[in-house]
Length: 149
Image (cartoon, rainbow, N blue to C red):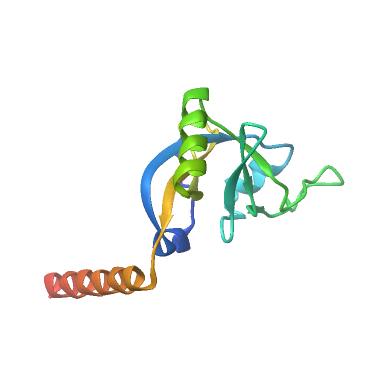
């Protein structure tokens, strides 16, 4: 079964420079997985933080499942992310020491049908870095257009 669910946080690549990327599992309840399979999720304004040595994602919006009854889930609740202990310790140390942040990049379904989140250890870009990114994207578009002709 091939899953084409690919929910991305496009703003994150514009605002942050990704240093390392990890794939984490997401703890979901009830109808949340059905909404994700329908593509009804958003990573806009979401971020990750540590609480009691566990990694959580806040601000992720998973819309209510339209066929759900009163068992439907809360849309903007905080969700726990699952990583190995070694990865959690490494991320927590880097976030505390060097002032980096962890941003959700993408939500997808793996080959077994489980929802996974791609997270990145990131450093915020300065204004001139953002302008440079826009210049590179424009140049790439121009080259692509020239190749098509």
